[in-house]
Length: 542
Image (tube, rainbow, N blue to C red; front, side, top):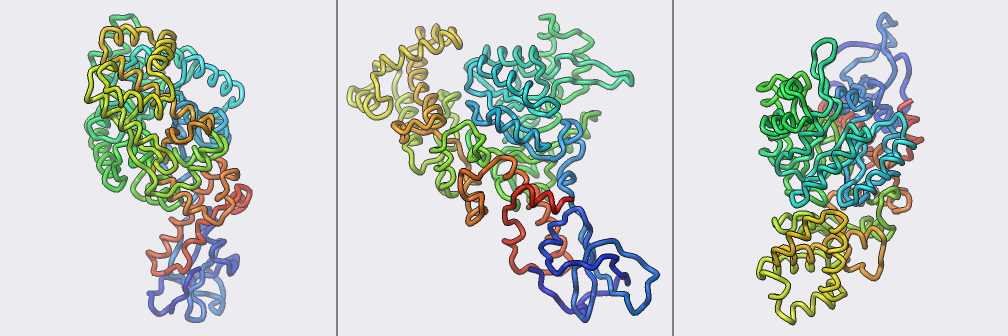
């Protein structure tokens, strides 16, 4: 806990008497994050006290006042404007995880806790996404939530169909992820319904929170919608000339999430280097463009503990985004088998592997390597794709090994299933494959990359070695933090409980840091962030 020190080591600031004497449990005082704390001298020691202070007291009762620990309400940790604009209470976002891993249940749990979450629409059929919309519009009435829109460079029609769906069903917030450049579909979503209010301010019904890890991509989202896309929308009758002019006054995304070393799509960038760079870029763009909508920057990737959350807020993050730690919770759309693997993951148990949605481009995702062979098998598929022009060119022994150990079926059968899938999803892919044998091979190899997370989410034990589980090193940090607590057991991990503990623990750490700055050291800092049940946290907040 707190070490006492000689009062004559510090200058006298004033004399006060606390109206309420503090308990001797200093940890409990730090946890009462809504209340200020006072450092008062008594018998050559410094005590920590709470309550209001008053003057005009008998001199014999006065104590020397040396310092102050400010309140740190959870609502004040990030940017108040972010919470206000998105109609949430706390600056905490559950990021989207593909194939419904960020499930309806997860979105509901965080939304009903006054936080934000995005449904993981990537990799799902449009019909499945609409089913999720149906459920949330019935079960999360009055709550804030959003849906994912992932960049699909090989399937632009899919982006358009999702945007059509979101516009038709009144989904006014999307998380744009894995975009390398802006697309017409994304611009159409952002500018749909743009107008001016009675005061002449531009109003944009649809908002985008963009997830980026590169400066050049951030620049595209900080800028206004590209003129060429706006003119195409005007020509197509989807935007008026007046609306196109209004679009020059808004950023593509008012909120940009800096994605550091995360699970799934990532550039493995360190947050301490990347975030300050994007923050400076944001400030420069705000000054350059003079938007009425103030640009904001959040941080995701590596946020898994109170310490990382506190560090993010100190860096200047307007909000936090979490991912892999939510996948390990019982509301995620994956299997108990995967949750157990995640609970056993350490920081070194992750690696990079070829991405299914951007396979031909050589894009990689971060996955668990411990307990599966997916990363090695996926890397072999990419190696063969680079070396050969078609399935027929594969060496006989290589093809036999693939059919026996990776696909567990004949490649001709895999193509039959692939053809059936794309005949419904995007028939243009089949026409391209028939004309280009190498592209056909890519689609066949992508069958494995696409099925591997499905096997994991379903818990198909027979394909355990082929599980593709998106995961960053922060999962190991989370497991170390909760070790020995009730959150160590996978069955006890709920997204709201994890979120409350990350935010509350960050607030407590920030308060403890104020003490350090005033020369008060801490003995057992681990006690500051021991996970608590939500009811216990709310008692300290009352």
